Image (cartoon, rainbow, N blue to C red; front, top):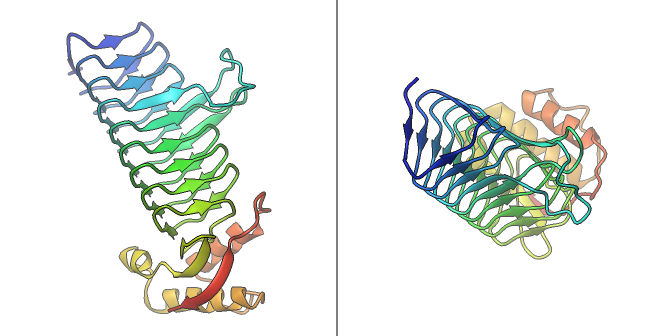
Length: 257
């Protein structure tokens, strides 16, 4: 096992540390934490004891993982977790809290990028390959899908859902759900159109894109999607819409191609 641990770092007894770990000056890893192979923990970063993470995660200086939920009714002795996948980057000042209920998990997927001072609250679920720009903050129980981009200073109210492949304009406040594949912004927030650039980068083009375009025209008219070709994207959209929302949906304006 090859590890590079600075002499000023504190690693408590009971930590599981994978191969090729790099632990920087004054970093703290508390008892019970599990870090996979090839993880890097920067100077003054903190991994608290109720964190389980996979391989290849990078914590920049002053990131803090696994803190207590910001819930006035939470009892610190509650056994809950922050569970993280592989190959995520957590920039300076990032924070994520463990779940608020016994044996529950806050979950972050793999391949995500969290910019400086962004925050994931208790009981959230964040998918894969999602990006939080600087100062993004999501409240408790928020669900964020795969390949979502949240612009700078976006905030999301607790229990909101943000569908996969969505892009949220910077400084937008979300207090309702965001439909997958869309661009949303404004005050109040509205769905403007499909996330054309993000879809193209994901290889969702041609007839696959046309089906989504037709689907959103039908949604604007409150009509059924059942007559459309059942592409992978349409199936995802239908499944997402079938889940009962706790917040409702943000409104529509004209959806352009």
